[in-house]
Length: 343
Ligand SMILES: Cc1ncc(COP(=O)(O)O)c(C=O)c1O
Image 1 (tube, rainbow, N blue to C red):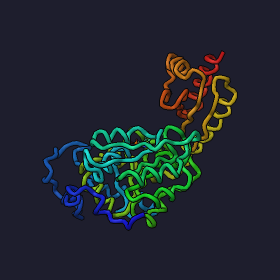
Image 2 (image 1 turned 90 degrees about the vertical axis):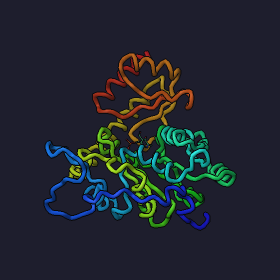
Image 3 (image 1 turned 30 degrees about the vertical axis):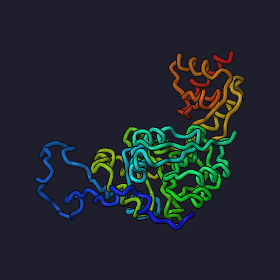
Image 4 (image 1 turned 135 degrees about the horizontal axis):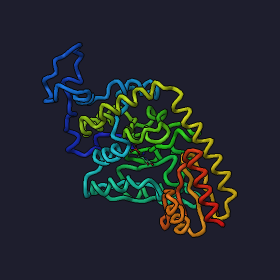
C-alpha cells in the first residue's frame, strides 16, 4: 500500500466544501425561542431534527468504542453507500470494485453517479481469490472497494479481511449489514490501524428497525467529516433518532433478536436438509440462506403462488434462491409449501 493521503482520494470539488452547520444544533441554549428555521410553532414534530445527531452518536460511540467524530449516520446504510461514492468518485472517470455476486446497490449507486463498476468474481465457494484481487487492483486504478462480509446474497463471511485493506491504495468499505449474525469480530476495531477503512452497519437487520431507515458509517474523523459535509442536513428524521436512542437503552433487544433468529436458522437448516428438491445449502453467517434447488424458477414461482416471497437469484447464481429466516410461523409455512412442491 502506498502512503495514505486522504486528500488525494477525495474529489476536488468536495475537498473545498464546508459542512452545513445549523447554528441551533451547535449551541447550548437552555430554553431558546426558535424563530430561525421557518417552522410551525404548533405540533409534536414541528421542529427539524438535530442535524448532528448528537445524542445518538454519543450513545453509539460508547457502544462501539469509538469517538462520536468517527460516526456518520445515514438514511439507511444505502444512503451512506451513495455518499461514499459521491465523495471519492469523479463522475465518468473513477471506478469502484465490488465482489460478484454481492449487494446490488453498490453498482446501482455507481451507475447513478456515472462511475464504472469492476466486478471481482468469487470462486465456487463464494470466496475472494486473492490473486485475482491483486491482479485487478494492480491493473486498474480503483477508488473504492466495497467488501461485503457477511456477503449478500451468498451469506458467507470474507476470510482475512485485513489482507484486502492492506493491499489496496483506495478506500475499502467493509459492509457489515449482517455482522450481528456472525461470530466474526467487527472491522471497527481495525479503524485505528487503517486510515483507508470505512465500516458500514445498519439498524435494519438484527436490530429490527428497517422501517426507521438508520445506518452508520465508522471511519477516521477525517473521512467522517466529508460524509457529514455531503449529507443532507436532516437526513435522519426526529422519529427515527428517538426510536434508535430508546432501542440502544434496551440492552436485551438485540441479543433476543439475534438469539431467536439464530435458533430459527438452525431449525430451518435442519428442515432444508430433509428436502429433496434442495441440492445445496450454502453456509451462512447471516439471517438468510442461499440454497440451490432443482428448477429454481419453478420452485420460486410455486412459492410465490402461495404468497411466499423469496429472492430468485438465477440466472446470476445458477439455480439459487435466497430465503430470509422468518418467525417460526413463517418458517413452518415455507417448509410446508416446499414439501408440497417436492411431492
Ligand atoms: C449488504 C447490505 N448492505 C446494506 C444494506 C442496506 O441496508 P439499509 O437498510 O441500512 O439501507 C443491505 C440491505 O439489504 C444489505 O444487504
